[in-house]
Image (spheres, rainbow, N blue to C red):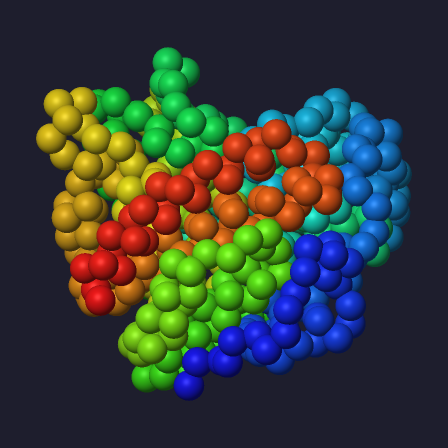
Length: 408
């Protein structure tokens, strides 16, 4: 049975300054994974804190040094700090570390510190991100992870330190939207990236979750609708926590999604944001050097990733205007055929369609809910960019409306 509609009125003031009662009601109404629940609860309990006031090189260096003092034996030097501009939700600083690595000796490494702002567009887990990057080392190209501050012990907010990965998200001559959305790689480069891009997703989904230490992940039961329900409850909870308006379309969509939850045929690692803009490549060799942005990863239904990778928002039309290219890489049918061959896993058209609808719902939740609330409260370092994200909601809303009309 779907959860009952909230039987109380929640005001802007309630969402800006959530009470313990409101937080507990939302937790009870929309049960989801433990780590997701912890992150969302932490977000709401910290919401009444101060707005984001900026962080300096000196402050960020101090946080890193505090963590290293508890993790590194001997002396170390932090130098060559610089901010990284990529990403719309996390504070990222590159730096060089000279230190004595156990069993290796003196090392000089280029690293990245990745920290939450006061409140993020995506309230996600650095602990999960650490576990995923560690698990996929040697399986697909990912940055090496070093340390994680999962609860904000050394940093003011949860943070992760990992190796700097070389490469570009788009060709030097390409133009496009922010965050890698709609990148045009061009015909020649696209053909070279295509098999690597598809093989990476296939390897993620075919990976055995039992072979890694995924302590922060809940595992849904095969044959149940648990995976889809956890994800829907997460999105519905975020909408109630963050939204600034009523949208009847979202209520209709959420109720349909609840009534039509698909069952899970196999537990896979789901990347959560596998698309153009979230991988790096060497433009000279056309080799993919790193798969990035694992912050939305979880254990569940692979069709969620497939629907995201092939979504209209992240692709573009071919140069002759005849073919839509998923993530700027390949026509949807070709991408899915290559995926099935590489992974040995079947693509279920009905589940793919369900998750296309769900993804549209989630995009609206993020763009018209979380981005609105984060900017309203001044909680982020990228307020202009995140305000721009709100515009993405309207295309997703139109796609959701069209799909719901065909469905109903």
